[in-house]
Amino acid sequence: MVFGWLCSQPETESQPPSRTDALRTEPQSSQPPHVTIPAVSDFTKGEDNTGQCLATVVSNICTFCFGIAIGWSAPAKALVLDHSAYSFSPSKQEWKWVCALLTLGAASWSIPMGLLMKSMGCKKVMILQLVPIGLGWSMLIFAKNVSMLYVGRFMQGMCGGALCVVVPVYTVEISQVRHRGALVSVFHGAFILGVIYSSAIGRLLDLWIINIVNLVLLLLCLLQFLIPESPSYYWARGNYSRANESLHWLRGKYYDTRKEMRQLMLEGTRSELALQQNIMLGFKRRKTRRSLCRASSLTIMQTLSGSTVFVFYSTHILVSMHLSYESAAALAVAEIFGFLVCFMLVDLAGRRPLLIITSLVTFVCTLYTGLCFKLKLITDHENSVPCGIPGFHVLVRGHSTPLVWAR
Image (cartoon, rainbow, N blue to C red):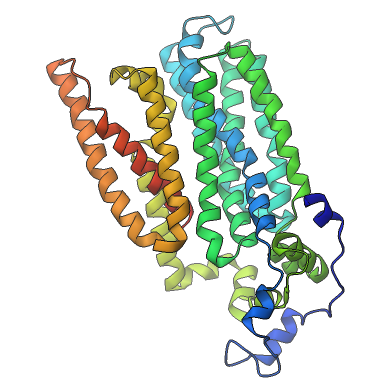
């Protein structure tokens, strides 16, 4: 079916008005008087959501691979420090840099790729990330010293920084509003599946085999060549026929694209064209500043909650909690269950109430778990942290973290 969509040619339609024509008319209402809008049933006739769901899954394959790269450090720590994985053995301080350089690589590459996305399109930028993550795994396979580990992890982080920007934007541009929250949350689902996969395979295979398998898995990312570029990118470039073809691929061969094509046309208002010419003008708008502050606050609080630290040192933390392998597997299942709950409810219940509830519960669970560890360090008491609290914490985090990406 997918290849049939790729090879099919939609019926030729009249070229939609240009952005210049839309600006000249300057309609006073959302529906210009000279445009006749058919009934809603005419638009939804022939709609098929398989295309946008398939494009979302394929675009997140590289996100899954980046989750593997992040989860790699937890099972690899003992093998690398014990001199059983490489011909060298880094110190504990050097290993901390091996973990930290991945995040530094992500921070350094996210802004340039965000700017490049505007000129190249989301699809090309996603495919381009195969280069840094492929080179990163190659450096880990053939590492002869700690410096090669540094470079490999930094390049893997570069891929992740770009994906955190490009994949959610691509998903928003290809998805319909009523499915947007669920489809965007797939980004975090692919990420946690990659981390869980990396932790599981680390218990079964040698590290050099793991590195080779993870490099080979990148071949799955070549499926991204089969998905279309977003319709909004084609429209911004003036390629209206390709935008129409992309919509037919995403919505179905017989879907009436006139409404969405008209929405793309109306996006070319005077204010948006001015913002495209000078991005700094956007910060003069109060609405833009408030939205940026809210989004940044959510991302910062998510990072400060300790999720990244837990992923990097999950093995050590679970040992400190005196949890068995079965208990660790239960935590992974709890996080997946939390993500699935978010996936099903985000577009029904809304983002704000879910985010408020899960954030409060996560705060209480994190505070309680932290106090338990602090008391253990002070009193040297060997009682384990109650397993129900970390499990409930992981479940809620699996619910709240996708909401940050689906905002």
